[in-house]
Image 1 (cartoon, rainbow, N blue to C red):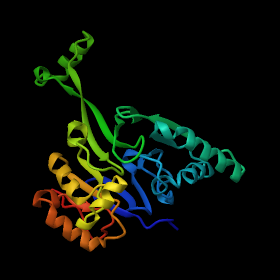
Image 2 (cartoon, rainbow, N blue to C red):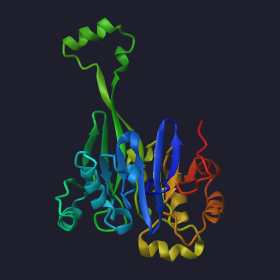
Image 3 (cartoon, helix red, strand yellow):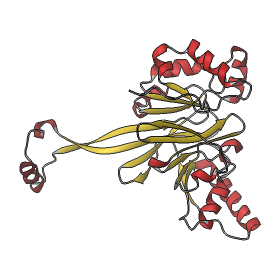
Image 4 (spheres, rainbow, N blue to C red):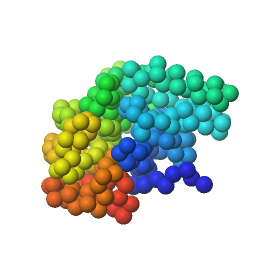
Length: 286
């Protein structure tokens, strides 16, 4: 039996699986990309994903990391890869080693220290790029980017044989392009993410919106979280096709949150936005 009742959203052939409630647990997996954004309490359904992208060390985002790594060993899978802020490496290694001693078995792990701007290849054509967020020391967000090569315009009308002939002459006939597929902000207060084109143009944006009530503005500031006013400003600056909201405060019922979102977001932005934990909602797709 599955350990969690996870929410699921489908966008074309992509599946987003996860659970996110502020202060309780946040974990979001995308099996097609082989990535899990944060790990929460490590749902069984996401153990097989090979790459965990850990945004920061708060317990509701990271508590399950030792179980994730240990259970992969138990299931005969290769050690999990964890990308995480550089300042957390030593602490996480100590936690994993301590759990190994408690369990009586060494827990294998591949820990990759990341800073803003660092990249990590997860598939031959897919990389993860880290960027800074404003939540706690060293906190990061991640964008999954597809890399392709595009034929230069002057060669578009050539036949296959002509293309091969040019290649044999070592003539550069194409150029690299990046396609940002999904961006995960993790926990963060407002920042000018529009200055990073790969975030602004990411097809899917997964963003926190912890507080939506006017009386919770001070709570958002104190906890370095996003308030609906910040979210509305940020989304107006970006050009994402789909927006998935996470980390809603337990202080607000999801039906009330939906009503406020509809009132505070522009119609165009609201139409492409969904709360992850709203299981009755579906993104409207073209």
